[in-house]
Length: 202
Image 1 (cartoon, rainbow, N blue to C red):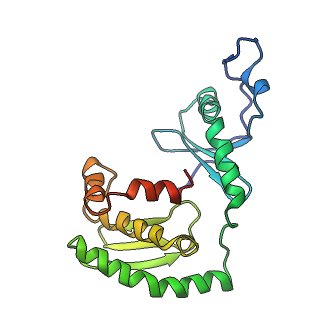
Image 2 (cartoon, rainbow, N blue to C red):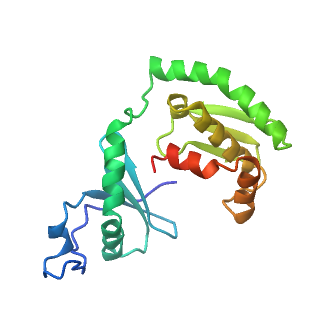
């Protein structure tokens, strides 16, 4: 993906007046700053990045700034919650001895989990790679039958690593997040929603 240059922080004042005072919402709430990146996509998305809790919005290229701003306004409570959680998370992993130590540990912990779940899901064991990743926990190339896992998982509960492995293996059945994909998840890991919420801090 090659996102277009980020917009400046929003300047439009949303036309909301929830308390009836005539005061714009921006003046009623401690409003978070955010950065917008426009991409070829259909829906607005938002991330709060650790450790500083910066807010990043991805928006369709045709989205109006007013609509983007309204989207952020509608999620102020969620943003504050995520920013609070971000303060408790470790800083993003950087290259160096710590990353290499996690890589070595995961080279030992991932293969048995991958083999176990591939067998349970009646799949051939795919190849895998460990990488520092900033926005995803894992990816799956269903054509090459190759899974990539984030080194950040080495700093999380082993059950969450297991969840991501099952998630990526499920993509070998269904490449997209379709109803059939979620049916695979429900079949093999019924508690996956709870694990996803824990991993994403929700």
